[in-house]
Image (cartoon, rainbow, N blue to C red; front, side, top):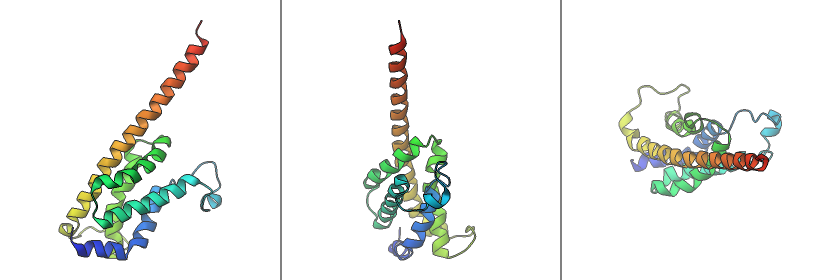
Length: 162
């Protein structure tokens, strides 16, 4: 990716971050009024998601190796796995980053259609790498949750067995 694209993303970091965080956070917690959900720390998972998304955006701008993003993805995927969403729903926020960056950098109010894709080719590749790492992490956490459920069922059935 060209250094100029990195610089442009860094210059617009706060705008990109604000839109991306909105794409990541669940719209309705189901157990808190929406006004309370907006308050910092009223939902600790939201604060953690915000911090990890900011760290992932910094990773994207810094041109570090994809493996270095894994720790941040791990925390996000823990939360997403507990939400009992399918992988496509849980991880769609990563693909949203492609359009968010284009939207902010081109300063259009509608999704871009005629973008010069050559400029964004390397960016798209890095975001795709991020998605693949996230899928691995999400799958691992869903597997752990299923193991916990299975162990709990075995424990309950074993206790009631004659």
